[in-house]
Length: 228
Image (cartoon, rainbow, N blue to C red; front, side):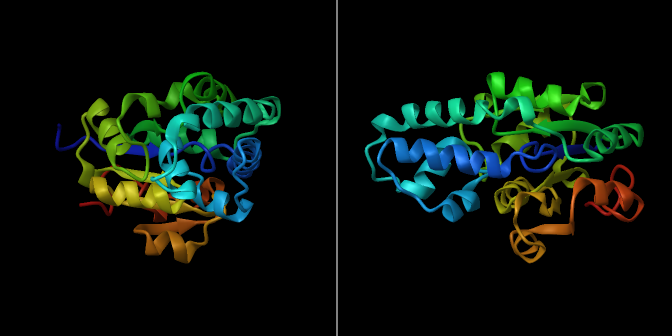
């Protein structure tokens, strides 16, 4: 890895695209279809994890795993009903382009994959600013494991200490911390600033639009600024 290279890694769901509560609803409905009546508030708090980790978190690791694939497929089918109305958060694409223009190697780091990822990228409409994409299919464990972050860093040849991860959930902050990468949090996924900081976020903004407005005073001001 080159010492002067720095990556700006971005979670997508809930950070760049307004999907957190749609995922919550889809998981709530999918779980109920298979007889698991889980409070929506608990599901919301698990959004940001990979699907396997989410089901372990909500249902326990000692359950019968035989239906996991069917529950996940039901979630995707229910969530797909919302795809035509998905929208990126204001300022999301501009933030990616501004970071790329300042010399960051921009990476999308997401637990989404396949058709879902294709839809998110079309909604975001900023592929011209993106150097690499890491998704759940490429790693053994998704967030809060650090695998997605580490893979993104390897793909663009950036050291962890000079890079920054931007996410909306405590699972993002934990994954970044475990990878040795500073985290910038945004509150658009429903986690409060205090929760994100407690999970390891170095700074928190109300949205990616607010982060864009305050970019010069953030860890994303320029590659390596404020990182180690």
